View 1 (cartoon, helix red, strand yellow):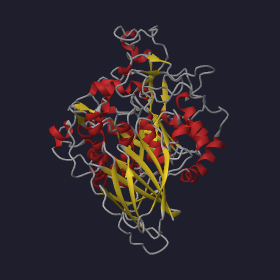
View 2 (cartoon, rainbow, N blue to C red):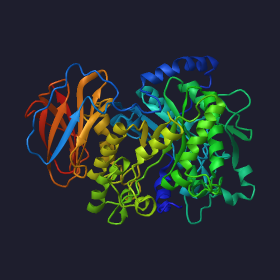
View 3 (spheres, rainbow, N blue to C red):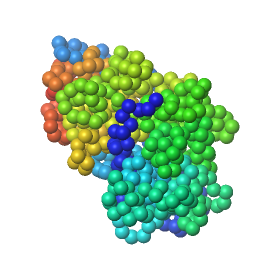
View 4 (cartoon, one colour):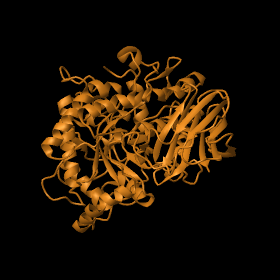
Length: 594
């Protein structure tokens, strides 16, 4: 089944070159086998230090020492909603890798824990010469999007700046490994000169019937000979395991995750120049296995993401794959085959199941991720419930025409993993709920991140859409602010805790609440309170914990300015009980104090 809004998503991904032009040059070519050996010896320990908790999620109700007997909270009085928090229930480690985004813009301000170099542009990316093909996003032309603005063209330019920045700041990186048969051989746009459509002078298919041999190089998952940090630019091949080895040589002490291409279920639409036929079940399984083997051979401790699907029809039928008959749901088929591949290889090849999620929910008949307005905003702030809520049915073609039940995206796919390939993590490396320049976008973003932590998603990176505004006009500052609620609510690196605890709201349609402690400091309790209503609402908060809390520091995100600002301290009205007046359409961070 075709995705109902395929045209929209192709437009949205026209900025899929999320590795920007201003990234820097490749590592020193003098790095050698000694560096490799050192990276192997130190890589795992350093990854642990930077927050690698593994691909699979920690179980809920893991034991925690709160330092004493639970204090029974008092009564906060009559309020519009109740938030019931218990530090001894629903305890689960939060993966630090869920607070990420695609690209490198505003890393210092927004403090992501992981950044991704991904998108359509990476499918035909040649790491040796930094050529790429734009696919359907821009006339199927080869060009130098990843070339440095000045200075020498060196291998791996598309990711070097991102990797260097990660080494300085300590966050993780996702790098994309193309798994199709061809990558760009040149950066020649055929003299298009920016003319673009409809003429599309630069379309490689206008280069003659032999364009695959003249304008592309053969892409191989593995190299039979020794790896080189200075790849041969004159041969007909590009090797992806050699790329992984190059990354390891320069950044082997960093946490680097390798994504096996991007949205292969859409190759026939986005990259018809190199893969015009729809990808099949068995073809994609083989490509994932071969690519993952190459990654793990070059860097045994590296982690991988597969199959990097674009959306629901990809999850279920691989976009109506030609060989799907009799094979059932593709995600289930894929997980089964990856488990078999592990048994055959003697090691795990795929660490995360990676699904992209741009909600299909509608407000007033219009998709929330591509429109503004009060009706869309009202639907947008409810849409995160489709990630988990077994009582919530959104207005979308997925629910109305296909499954006729709540989506429950996260538990749905965790159940598939548990049944067919236990230990595989769940990743969502592209997601966005729209409304990026509106408070509803911040609310949805914060709500989603709270759900990810509570429900056990272990890796996630936002994709900035530019929404429905003119190109370049929208910097999605509210979306970014929604992320900062968890990564720097005070503007100085104040973070949500590393361990989720039970936090329940009495009315999910009106409000959401998330709470955390720190494993090393369980008396540090951070609460994120979300008011989805267009009216102010009072919240009665009770906290069952071994510590008695008397006040809370408060930060708020509300109104028309995407800034998180400090508010007056909140005093307890009874033992471990607070009354908090939430502004209309707001996200608040409360840090409890003894």
